[in-house]
Length: 232
Image (cartoon, rainbow, N blue to C red):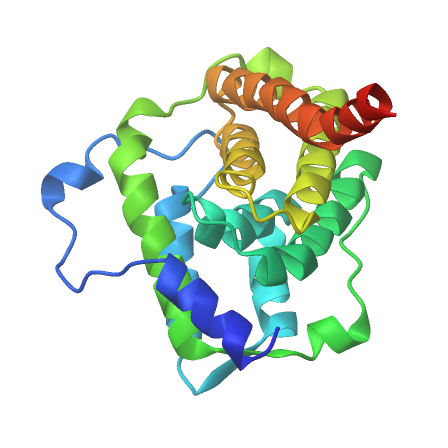
């Protein structure tokens, strides 16, 4: 995660300095059992970035209340755009895989000590967190707790973890093809927000995107071998 990678992520997430209109805050009612909406929690992440850098360990500890899903959502935000970032997506994809596996097994997140000790640039945290805030405030009016029976089962989190882990592996593939970062990132973001906001409709959309991504990446990996078979 060097300075060149950090610059790529900064360029991938556009920021605006204008305050969010009050109309974008409508419908910002947190689901039962939660203190606030995700956009407000991301505001807390932005407030952490007071110095020049922010240790990954501090960020992980701050997000522990919402768990691994919120951290996975934060990680994939820079990849919700069509231009692939092969050199950047691999380490972040691996991190998402670890998050998904921890979710599926119902265990706390484990990251290598070297990763936890890594210092993130504060301007990067502010840009990514601010971009996530604006995105969520635009869609939160359409997100609400639905199908609570689904999310109250332990296997619901396990299913979401499996989806996020496999999509993270797709994100980690260094493919210089347009939308090969976008599709797994969108799958991860939709699944994570659906789980966190207890919205079964959004969770189903995330699983549908997951099926599409499996088909697309399966074709990308298999078709070259089929072509060689036909040639020889």
